[in-house]
Amino acid sequence: MMRPITKNVIAIFTSDLFNRILSFVALAYLARVLGSGGFGKISFALAIFSYSFIAINFGLLTIGVREVAKDRARAPEYVGNIFGLRLVLGTLVFGVVILLTSLVPRLHSLQSIIILYHLALFSFIFYLDWLFQGIEAMASVGYSNIIMPLVYLVLVILFVRNKSEINLVPLFWFCGTVAGTVFLLAVYRLRVGKLGISFRFSAWKEILRSALPLGLGRICAEITRHFPIVIVGFLKSDQEIGYFSAATKLVYLVLIVDRILFVVLLPVLSRYFTESIEKVKGLLSDLCKLAGIIILPLAFGCSALAPVITNSVYGRDYGPGVILLRILIWFFALTVLNTIYCCALIAANQERKYALNIFISMLVHLTSVTVLTVLFGMVGTALSVVIAEAASLGLMYVRFRPTYDVRFWRYLPKPFLAAAVMGLVVYFAFPHNIFLSFFIGAAVYGLIMMLIRGISRRDVTNLQRIFSLDIRKCRES
Figure 1 (cartoon, rainbow, N blue to C red):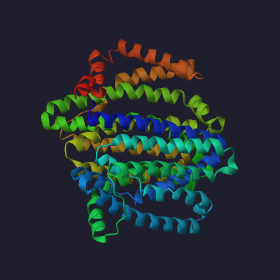
Figure 2 (figure 1 turned 30 degrees about the horizontal axis):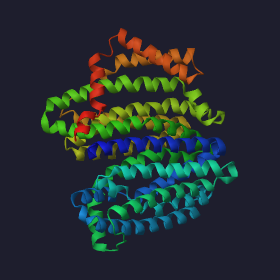
Figure 3 (figure 1 turned 180 degrees about the vertical axis):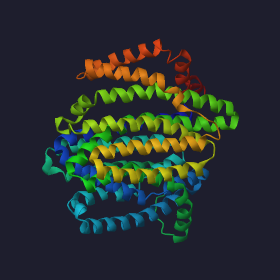
Figure 4 (figure 1 turned 180 degrees about the horizontal axis):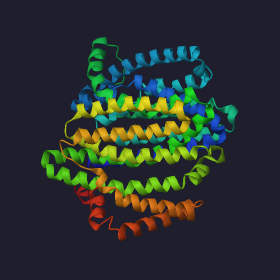
């Protein structure tokens, strides 16, 4: 029988993969049906919603996970208190959104779409993913994470056929969130029991006091993530929002690599810090080398094939997004390296340094995005995202260096050279065939890496060791 930890890891990976794929298919379909202008409108409205979503969360769910994990018997109490608090916050936020969309001209032109998206606030208020994370039952959350985009995708494909039906998109998205929420509520009733809403102000005060410090890092990260779409939305046209959003969605799809790295790496590093600093040193050095070997060919390959990728997924209407994808893919490369240092700081109990870095990075990001968007348009926006992530990586490195100086750039020259040559071969020889380009590119990259001794058998063994699950032990347990 599988251990709970192994089952939870598999549930997270599987559901996250299916969630991203289903959501991406829906977005690609809408991008073609609505055109760049319509796609830009729903992307901007969804970015506005993301800030409202932060307002009903900011650390509450982290506190819920922690407290339920400590004492499962108190789960109904925390469910009731968090339901009540989020209901009040959600109602206030919904009222503010109605007011802002009435007063701000840019938002007023999208009022119906924005308000329809915000109906989902009242679904997410009762979404119990945090509760199931606390009781270590992630399989239920995994099913819910698949149900939501699946319902949304089916409804969109069946009923959204042209630009005039754009208002159905947020409504169907709301239906998807309701389906996922109802599923978890039903499972909760079967496994835990009592459901209720509590309006105890004393309990809310204590929850908020504990939640705010823990939620600050998450708040800064979410503000940073969605700000480029928001600033483009206010400064540029709907079509330009559509181009930028289309490119970012492609990049976020491959960021599942980063998601897997974080989930696997954090517990391993945390254990190593309690066992031996030598293990930490060895693991971080191996990871930096392996990261360069894996992410650089992905980045160069995506950059070389950006035109055919964009046209294949979105259609020729999104041609201006090609240059944006070529720039933003380097955000992905930097993010993977950044995650290694983030995990190291957290595992070393240096949460304050980590939180301060996130806050400084957010300020750099907000400033650079605003300035470069004004000066250079969408290209400036994309460049600012990469610049801000590079700054964040530099900060994380500097903060962790006193603990152990892992110089990631030492491991990049050989894979960079091999990946650059591979990119040139793919760009000039096979620019219109993704599948042939993939196999030829992989062969060229592997051959060059062997010739310059950029990868060894030990590197392959380390990769298997870091990301593999011990199936034999799972069966024994």
